[in-house]
Length: 366
Image (cartoon, rainbow, N blue to C red):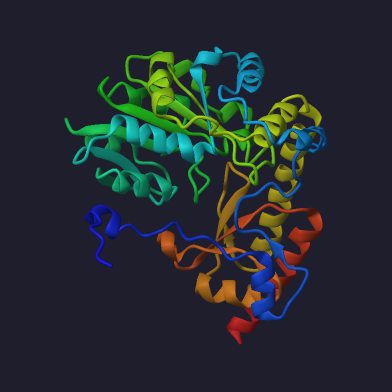
């Protein structure tokens, strides 16, 4: 078989998926593992969402609502925007892909940071675009250098705020000053996957930027704060004229029925949402204090995860902890060989993580 594959596809490295938990347990001969590696919501979705999803199971022979009509109207009402300013996708990843496919021609440029969410650069490469990557400055987006990197070929800028994997943010003042330097021909994409975990005084209000001269698109998801990662539903906030272009390219029925039903029900359970916020904050404070006692350096974070400088090989520590049934994320691929990333879990999971970390560090240290 002789296939003709464009070079940008031939050289594209697939997004590295983790093995199923059951397979890892089989390989290592362990059971009862806990996974604190993927920034998931340990408390799961609202009971209202699971009840609504169960009720919708009898209707799976029908196609989904292609316009996400009820979800769009309820969300628009809740966050104070117009339904036509919303575009829903199979996770916010799909909105990233739609933006790249709609506004980027081969040879044109997109600016991202490093480290950041890997999907931005992969989708740009798949489109035949050019990635311009600016290193973080002290773990933060270097907004000045990003602005200086803009050329007449720049079409998009992706900024995850909070950043993954560092959990750092930029302020309203910093972002507004940055936008003043960006031409009106460039779309600034503000990825707010973890924005719910940012304390209110420090949180940007994306609605303030939707109608400035430089176009801004904000991305959000139901995967994190609302616990619907397995159903894949996200959305973008944007000007109606940008949304119109994305709808032209968007696949029909791109958000499945159960995702729409679950997301809609989540919006009506503020109590469960607030409980998730409170428990995440409590877990973060406890974990960071306990990990610091072990001689490690946990980094401050505005998300539901944080980096830890463990002072040894993060990959080796990952293996040691995995053998104890605790899964964390080593960060060498992001440029932090002596760091791990930890997601906040249930109280019992957090306690088990600290014990496994202490044992593993002792084992490595001899």
